[in-house]
Image (cartoon, rainbow, N blue to C red):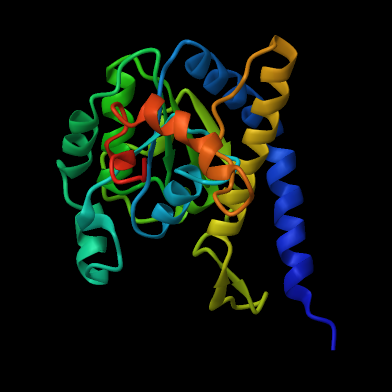
Length: 244
């Protein structure tokens, strides 16, 4: 019996491409300027958006100049209900951003499907206030239906908004009354990898060599990564535990 779910996901990916192709290209150009100038890419998210932070950090094919902005309290595996409360707690996002201390020529990326909780909003606001442009991966459609827990939205504090096309409520199955099969991780991860491909092509056009990790599970991977660890570990504390 044919399953409509794969077709639904593919349609959402096409929707994302239609909505955000230009924004992704603009974001790739912004990231390239930051990387070329020696800046870091600060990346933030809470709850399941931390899956996207993990996708950007210390990842085969990913940028080595990524620094996660996060707090253990927003990590669901520690205490799931408490992580939801932490994302809604005023002041935490601002404290996290201040501790990371981003400054030009850095750039920030904030993942939040709803963009309505204080944590991502405060991080974006603090970064923009420091002259660090923010790229928001969010869904305006989901945001419009989400409970307003902050005085503003993530999109109000972003230089570039990438619409991930996530429907309100995230789930898509069954189509008439969806209760399961969340798609936000799939869509945001796709948008990020598409940004990386455009970033690579722009760098190639300019003759720039991007600092990208190689899989540690292929021959020579550890050796290729060693110089990147030494280059960035003093600026990215989360690389401090990596092997020499």
